[in-house]
Structure formats: C-alpha cells, structure tokens
Length: 298
Image: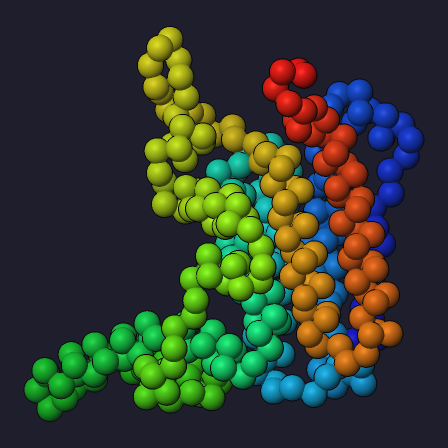
C-alpha cells in the first residue's frame, strides 16, 4: 500500500438527515454516499501492492488482471455518480450497472477458480477478436502490390502485438485456449441462484441492446393513450444504489480472500466489508418496507 493511501472515512449522517429521509421515504441522499464510499473502497483495495508481505506470491499478470477489474468497477461507479447527481441519465447508469455486474462476476469467478488456466482463458477471450483482426489485416496486405502496408495497419498490428506480449500469449496459444464460460455458467459455478443471472445479466441486457422493455422504461411514455418520446428526465433508480455496491463488496471480499496469505489479515478487511454491507442493507430494508409482504396483507 502506498503511504499516502488510507481507508476512506465512511459517510456519517446526522439524526436530522436520517429523519428527513425516513419521513420523505427518499433514501437516495444516504445511498448516494454509501455508493460513493464503496467506489472509493474498491480503488483502495486495488492499490494494495503485490510486494506487500501480506500478499501471496502469484503471477504478476493475475494481479494485474484483478486490480484492473477492480479499477474498472470503481471508475464506472464514480462515473455513475457524476451522471446521476442531477437526477438525469438513469438510462446510462443502468447500462453501466450491467458492465459493473459482469465485471464483478468475472472477479469472483477468477478468485474462486484461482488457477493459471482460468486467468489464461480470461486473457485469451479478450484477444481472440484481435487475432481475427490481425489475420484480416495480413490478408489485405497480401492482396496489394508489393505487399504494401498502410500506416493505420502498421499501427493496429503493433497494438495487437503489444496486447498479446503483455498477456504472455502467442496467436497460436490464444486460438487454442478454451473460451471463457458465459456469465450464467460462472454464476452457477459460484453457487449462486439463477435469479441473480436473470436479474443482473438478462434484465441488464435490456439497457445494452435497447429492447422493447428498455424503450418503455427510458425512451417512451404514455400520453393520452399514445406512446410519445420521453424527455431527458430519467432518474437512477434507488435499487441501483443498493444492488451494485453490494455486488462490488462481494467482489472485493473474493479478491481479498484470494490475494492475502493469512486469515489474520483477511478477517478484519472482510469485517469492514461486512459492516458496510449491513449499513446498505439496513437502509434498503427501510426503503423497501412492505415490498415483501404477501399481497393480501397490503
């Protein structure tokens, strides 16, 4: 850990602030701060140095993959905060949530597997398209007189070679390595229920692909019996500020359990993550009061 890095301070709320949230039923001010805290905590853990005596000895490329994925989670969370703080861009934060969800599943799956094969599959999965692009470029070059190479082709080929070199893989290896399992298979491997996949991945895909439910949620609205274009006024749903940080906390817990060598080092950090989870769940419980009653009781 760098000397300048310290665990960020958790958000604090006055009795008056809590009272206002309870009376209005709007807990977004509190959830916003906890969401921000989790995003900062994520980058804090990503900045743990591989040479720390508490960190296990494992290949540097694995460390780079996991810290890069944590950095992705943190950056996308902070982007969501920037987008949502004025009560707009709910359609975009939902799309980014889908990205965060998949990233967290990959982190947890890699840490669960903990094998060189799993990390090689992750690396190769991202490079298979680049291998295909490289073959297309070489084919175009071969079709020209004197095998003339365009400047942009040379730049693209150099970029592809760099990506493969940093991964420590050749084109032949990338082509031969088994594909990554899909998200549903990874979630099943982690022992989670199908519901997690349906809610996080399949429903999240609406926002990525622009399906009919997505149009009705963010881009169209009913007016006088007709569907008209919706204005740019989509709020980020409060549930997004609950489910995403909870998932990122789970990914951080998996990461800490994977990289740290001693239970004595793991337990206090997981204790911190558990305490943050409880704070968010407590707010969610108040926000969702009555949602889980039987319909006949409402």
